[in-house]
Amino acid sequence: MKSHQALINQLVKDLPNDSESKNWDKKFWIVWFFFFFLTAVLTYASSLLFPQDIYLPHDLKNAQFWTEITIWLLLSLASLRLTYLSALPGANTTDTRNFCISMAALISVAILFHTSFTSLYLDFLTELNMSQGPCGIFILTIGAIWTFALASMVRKAAPTNLSLTAVSLTLSTGAATTMFMHLFCRHESSSHIIMWHLIPLILLVFITHNISPKIMRW
Image (cartoon, rainbow, N blue to C red; front, side, top):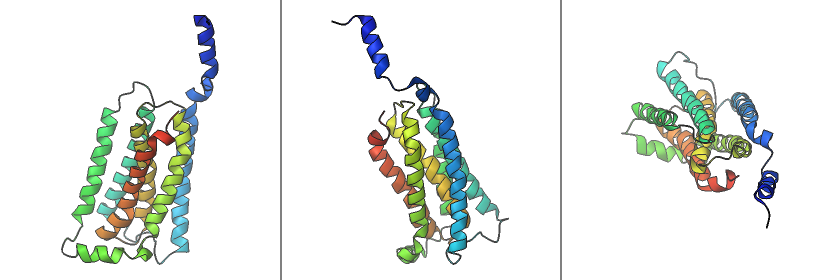
């Protein structure tokens, strides 16, 4: 039978690279902000390629517009912080988690604020046309690529709450992607925002929540 020291030495050999585990966050921040600016460029490029579908709103002084953009940005950054904290053993995530919930609630209120309930059903029928859907496809595609590119780095921190880490990571990338799309999309109706901006984000979060044991297992 091996001695205690021999067993300890064997366990140390089996552990992942120690410096790699400790320094995962540096690469994580760099890659996250790289994708943040890349997504901004790609969204703007889409506005040039498809000017009939996407454009920068002319009324940039609209307070409601900038309020919604700010809320999306705050949700993205708060979720990013929650991702980082949830990957650290023993870190307190309560305040950051509550802030994320508050931002998500504010987004819901902002959408409902300019919803015309009298024509909502007909508006949704119009939005079922897939020609209205490039926004949703963009949010799903970029959000998924961004999320999975970062998941391998977060795994190195050995997070214990896999679901929370995966969901917060997806919210950080998905909310940022949705923010940029909201910035350039010409469709301002609540039905379009719900159908092609909000639902793709919710779908992305739902998928990563269900596969979190696979993408976050270390």
